[in-house]
Image (cartoon, rainbow, N blue to C red):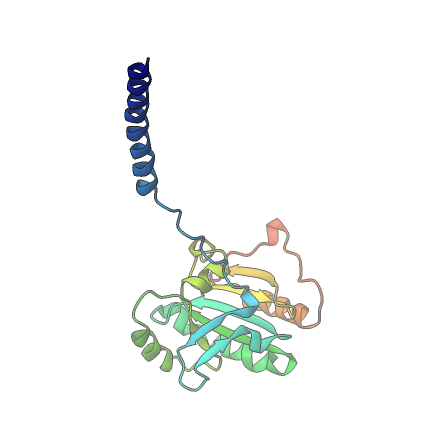
Length: 200
């Protein structure tokens, strides 16, 4: 009887040891889930790396709180975008006194030094910052930047009032800016009136 109990304990020990080893190996081999990515910053609280020497070292959209902002994603080496700088400068000049600013966002994977050199030659009358991945994510990620340029009009509360893919007709853009500055709803666009991007 004693021998039988002793043998039974040995058998149970032999069964438990491999099972414990398997559990230990499973625990060691288990990979911890990567930490979740931080949420993108709100569009009215972005910090941009400045690409123009005449402006401060960083561009913070929060510094323009209470103003209507037109944030324009473009490329400094894109000829149509460069040709449109005078129009964006005109918006800045015409509406700045009413509480409006243009902010350029260089959407370009090239080295920042090369982009900064091209930015210096643009003659932009508005700040131009680098659109790094967190900035792009704040607007919905790369899929939201479907064309160059793509622009977003922010109202005085920092909310996106309208997005513009491609070259939007200037009279309609100015009408939207006027409405946003006056605190009015933006003009509605019927399906038949939804304009195609302008050629230039």
